[in-house]
Image (tube, rainbow, N blue to C red):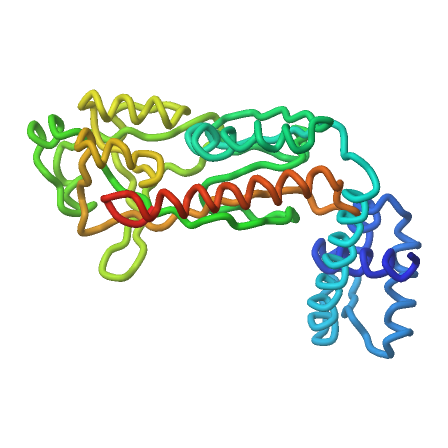
Length: 311
């Protein structure tokens, strides 16, 4: 396994851009980390990093070797996970986070079947629309909606959701039908925004003439719960920006109608994010494989049945 440890060290040095940071991540000394990289370079006969006192950058050979190393390590983790599944019944507790609406509609409904298949695995599911800190909050994985910040986490994409600006028919009757994002800003329209402590997304990304433009609408009402915003929109309080999946039933019933259709929101990715570890816990892999597959199946089945269009 010495070569695997060397590959893991190389990958973490490449991703973190630092010998000492990689050493801390792998819980080895900086000298061990540096020695492994030096031995690897000697074995390959090429330099993988250009080093200075202030920076460490991968060479062209380093860029190429990283792609191959990732494939090798992913294959090893998959094989190890399969062996663990065969040789023992996985057990333990998983701590998972998901956004409120999609957590209720997509993630939570899959958990009972997962529990039936793996009765010795306990699941602690937290639902919140705020951005979570996986490492500091002790999470094994988090389902996230929206663009992800740069980090050393691993990501499994699930689906890119179509979004839509909507309001109730009563609201449109009282305030008029905006055709574009500019109409929303130039007229006294009321917008309902998702905000929570530490949130940075105080804007809507709308598609305007083939380009993406950030709009900063005035807030009428705010909440850190997306379902609360949907309820306020149904009550005629203003305009919300939601995934079609979340409100497909209201669109089909006509209780919410699209507005500013000439400048629709950009797609919003839904992903599963988990820590980059030397060896992935088999029960985490089992959970992600199962939930991601079932989420995709649910989205696909509902995408073909909605009268509004693609989810």
